[in-house]
Amino acid sequence: MTLSPRILRAGAIGAGISTLMLLMMAFISLPRGVEYPGIEVLTGGLILPEAEKIRYIAGISHLFIMDGFFLVGWIISWVGLAELIRPRYRILAVLTLTFGLTGAMFDLIENSIIWGVIGNFAAGRPSGSKWVIPWKALQSLSYWLPFLGAVFAACGLWSARRLDKITALTGSVLLLAAIPGLYLPDFAFLANMWFLFWFACVALLLWRRSVDIFKNS
Image (tube, rainbow, N blue to C red; front, side):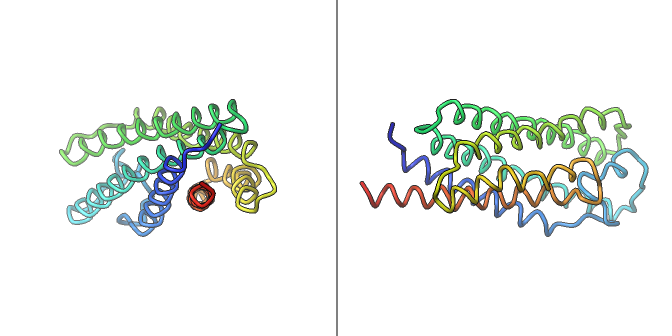
């Protein structure tokens, strides 16, 4: 089975968009050093003055816009990744795509919950704290599913080629460093750093492979 260079190139662009969005989101800060999504603010544990409340809502809105582009890039890149793996290991390509896209779906649902709570907060209608547990569960799945997808991708990518190896190691060995970030607040940045490295590697890999195919066609 032959590879589609157009799908690979689209996947590379998608991964590049996701990488860029992650970098841009890292520069958005919320008042009082609050970390996204600001659970203490949304549950009423921290009351912000009006000026800081406006800044908080604006910051969250900017994050949501960027995260929307991030998810679009995520979906496109995972399609390109599965296309690259497909000719060698069809079952691994299916598993990679399934877990990757399902992770994006859970991320979208998680965002929808937060956006609803933000809407109530902006309107002065407190949402309480009952939403936190289901949101946390969805957030965890939105990390674990792409993590597993990356492991399947790593198995399908491993070869003698340098970029294949680097991407495979990012989706397997480097992943071990990201897992503590899901459960230890002080290391939360590690999970997000893994996504940054992962999408950067996928962007380079898919672009390089698409160029190679065009040259050889």
